[in-house]
Image (cartoon, rainbow, N blue to C red; front, side, top):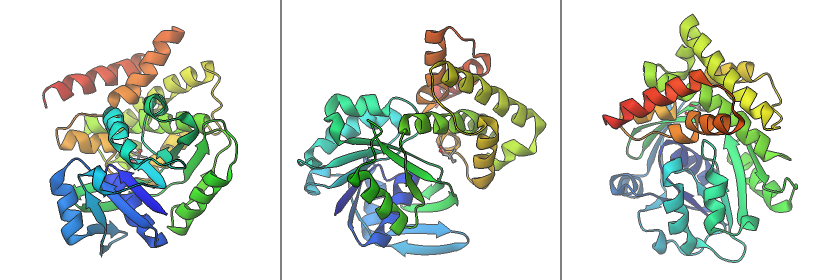
Length: 303
Ligand code: PAF
């Protein structure tokens, strides 16, 4: 099987590094030449639980050099999805599967504008990783991965991908309602990402201060209310769930935190900004999500 990872940032490299354990052919495709060149020439430096290893891997900025793929996984930032999907079309053959494991809302819609929706599957992951420098990551948070078909059927192809991920040590289950799970993951990012970006904290530190804990609860409660009003079924108490993820990824700096550290554009529009859009449509006030969205957008403009 040929697997292509679009986006060799922290999470793309993490999944790429883990998936090499399956022995399948794996390619990382990225826009940053320094990143792909480092990985190609020196391998991926992969830190985990105090150990470090070099994983040899194929990486290229030129997607046309890869050939056709069986599985394409998107881990680019949400604002790059459209471009990445358009570039990835050269990888397509009759039975290619396109999987998104990105944060936020809206990736499915962007993908299905260019790809037949029968070829698209959705997923979420609770893992966290930090990009220390190009080609060098630290695995800093563990959690379950869920994948599922858009029509919620349990199919052989999704089951096989879940088995492949499990073989790589990525604990993965097939979901029979991945859209609910995407919202469940959204609530995690709603509670953790903007707050860690704005405070400079690692994920776990949000739990150590009553002030940030209170803000996390407010952000998540507002978003959970929006989800409920949309008819989304959220399995677990959302605040407990977000706190558990913050604990399990305690040592990680969230992806938005890392974006702030590097003065990069963030995924705010697909996370708290997406909650705002849905809330406006439903005419529900979400003042805490409004406040963090405004703050993140204002600071971003200075980058
Ligand atoms: O965006 C992130 O950083 C991750 O989704 C998560 C799970 C919050 C871990 O840092």
